[in-house]
Image (cartoon, rainbow, N blue to C red; front, side, top):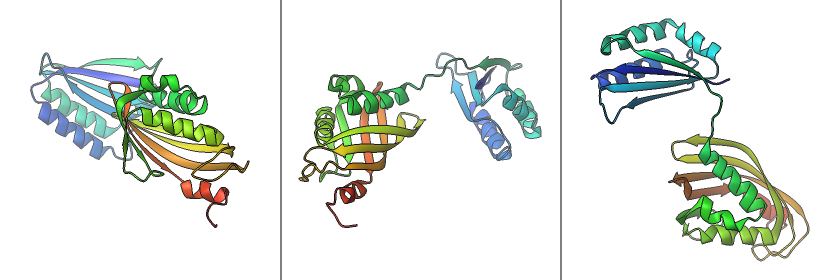
Length: 232
């Protein structure tokens, strides 16, 4: 079970605190078990600082605390604080990756199931879409998604397998495998009935909970070869 430790303290030395965190990260490289660390400064009280550290489990957190480097840095952190820091230990019982969920809904509900009514819920109206299969560098507007999904669905009966998703900040990267049966015109190629597949990666950038920009990279050449449109 994922474990999170919250360290709460008062200090007017936030720059020194940040440098201390850099030192800890450097000294524990290859040893630490922490997977994510965030330092936040209270907007209402600039001296109120909260550090949030995530671990794969409580046991891994205890291993991390037992490192000599962690103890040394902790003592230096205490010296920077006005009073002793307080600790809150949390077992994570729910972790919602909301942007990743939106990406999954696009692939499963819009692309595969054809729920075009969900486009405006998932995509910003001024979406910027970058697609290697198009002659232009980018296209704009959520209608682009409706048109693209409609075109692909008319040319293929297909499914997506989401192999992995990584989220950082306002971006989600999805690595996927696409498998389909060619049943309609595609880029001037009449239906062949062939079963085809390709792999790709899409990076989605979010704004206010909706997809604002997308970059599509996929093996279009492989698909065209399977359709005998280009020689092997």
